[in-house]
Image (cartoon, rainbow, N blue to C red; front, side):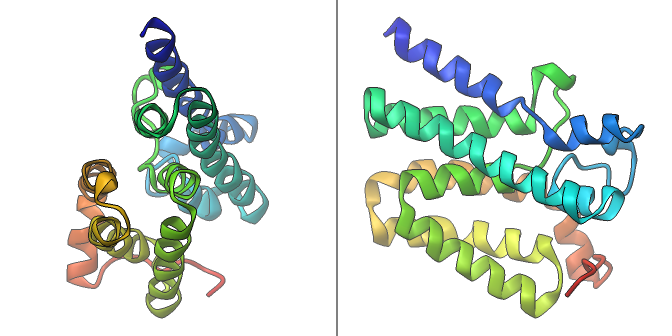
Length: 192
């Protein structure tokens, strides 16, 4: 049991690794005080450019996937799902950065794809269609979060509670985006 708890704690701190904050500091800015104030890929794209955004996306996805895959290999799926949520929470509320991180979408993607690859790829494809149609990343994230628990229930009911947890947190973190989307005030992302 102690080893499993240690794995969860390690996963949380793995989630604390924030390329958005680190790259921002390397560029002389606090990404949490620029643009939207979010330490995530979309804000990095707007503030620091495409290369920094690509690095941020890859690392944020990878840390969620690594937490799950290592725990799956060592302990099995149940512990892996808990470790995935721990990494996800570590990204959003990182102790290393005064508990102010990103909104968790990329890390959640890593967690989902590592836990259930087919489900993860389907949700990602759906999100990309919404992003392409609306030119708003937040719209894709919100729609994917709404659809994910439903898809998980059909895919494997044992994943439902885990899927609801991830989805609810993503939706809560995007509540201001949802208001702006409803008002038609959410900014588009360049490059579309």
